[in-house]
Length: 332
Image (cartoon, rainbow, N blue to C red; front, side, top):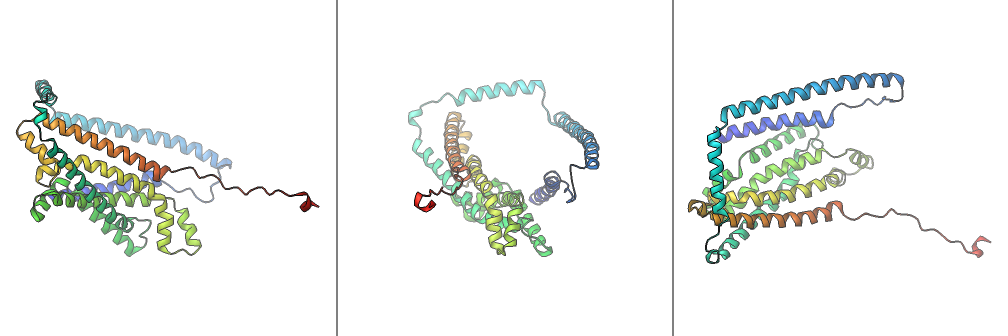
């Protein structure tokens, strides 16, 4: 029942965010007969800008007032007293002292920790790459600028709801489900990442397809290109940078989040976290945290190089016709 309520909330938020994106990104279309040089249009634009400024200031003020009211309500209901705050700061200082005081470092099973980190990376790459390969073709079925028509629109709506269901369930919950299904170990963690990333990446890929310019697709239609060619060269060519950036970022994000999977028995470094937290070995916890930070920074550097290689690329020089030299015999 709780999962069903979470999925319903995610679906409602998805519909609301879709309306906001449509209003903010697309806005109002300018009529074809618009001529900004006519005096009537200039007078209309001045009046429109004045009204728009007042309108936007009013809505901005309402938004700020709503945010301030929400924070006041939240801290009045769930805030803490000054005594609790001071006690919490002292506890944090105590834990930080224990984290940075490493006892008997040479006796730690460093090879075991390194093995668990490598298993975590294997879980992340297996789940994320597989989810990318599945989510990319499904994202075309969820893009509204591709699935046009009544039946196609219904199919796109159903595909979006499927993405909402998959990403509405947290990765840790998927881990618990697959631990019961396939047993303890890395396979359950990889399947948990797979299920959540299909919903998340599929939705993000679909949004990137919808944000492209429609002019190349119209040009391909005018030369009798097939639907597959229009989607490949008119849409995916423009959304490819977003596809690379989102996929690389999701690998980084899953590397940080996969530590939670070990707490539920889905393999990886999270199991080491859980064991040492129960034993109050906060120095080991800090060591593993620093090791994971180094791993994430390394992945970030590699992904930055890949983004530069496949998104920025090299500047292609403009093609110019070579100058032709005429000899004296040719001129005569």
